[in-house]
Figure (cartoon, one colour):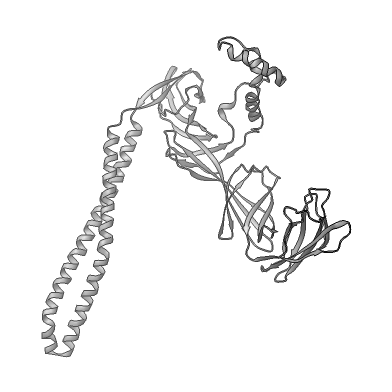
Length: 519
């Protein structure tokens, strides 16, 4: 007995999906064979599972997965192409009729113009009013003809495009009708019932050609108290051979096929390089069929990488879609929303004017939601302005992450060298060079802004060379790499200056790579 079923739920993994179908059957007492047919060729026969639910005494006795050949997908494709062809043909008829009406209207107006031109001298002779009326008619007719002439090329091009579309669909329809039967699967479910009853059969199986990836839309707004709305999206694509219509969708990071045996560690051998070199000629002469005990010691790297990959893959995360979705088997990405999350970012600015005299806006965010943000691409917006796309690393709940929001032209940054002196009289035959810089920052927004200013002084790579920070306003202390950093608050419309000076001492006659030059 054939058992009609429909897909009720889909769990999409990284490279596959698990499908669950459900169907109701009226079974009689005794053994009943129920056939679920027209399953796709991407189905993994070893993954098929079945359950039977019933109020009566019904038991699952077994199931048999069989290869089958069917034409249902081709028939559905023919139906869709036929409907598409009918719609295109109707549009062609309407456009052809419109062109005919425009042509008839133009022909009538041309005839009227010719007649009016012949009667114009007579109208002028009979009186001023009749002459003016005839002239107005001729002008209006000429303008209408010009309008028709402007419309005709566009309509004719649209008709040619429609004819090309119709020819393309007709070719597809002809080729589809010649396609051979499609290979797929059917499943025979055997159940035993103590008495006549109604039973629900749930069939699940794994299919290939399905995947999903995270995508984010991150929108920030507000200068004084910035707010962030993170829309957590999933791009789901599948080309499994069957449509997922109005199904319950679950998205998982688990690799379904990776649930295999527990990994066992092999011995990790250390062999002196000299011993390996001495053994190499003997190994080259050994026959491929002969066992080589030491060979396993040379390939442990590959196995260790494989084990590490499994260990670091982490626990699976699954998200349930809030509403039923439909995804056709066309292989194109289809978006579905996982969650809309409100977050409170700490927005500040970072400037390194020696590299770029601009202020880069930055958002520091703590993920206060229960959602794991998986690694993926994010579209960034500030209000209605699209800032660009960034790559978001994986973020666990309560973890912190940063977003670079690009340059904000409302924060002006200018860095100038204000001092460069060379002392000519020094003890111990040393040369001292003093250099100073001033950076001016102006906040053109309507609210105070926090900014991190970064600069640096040289680092000596020789004991004969010394570098000293002479002054800094506001105060700053260089780290071991010579980096300077100031935490600043920029009031609106008030310039803020940061200055620092440093000196370099080195022996006379010694040239230093990277030495500041005199202007």
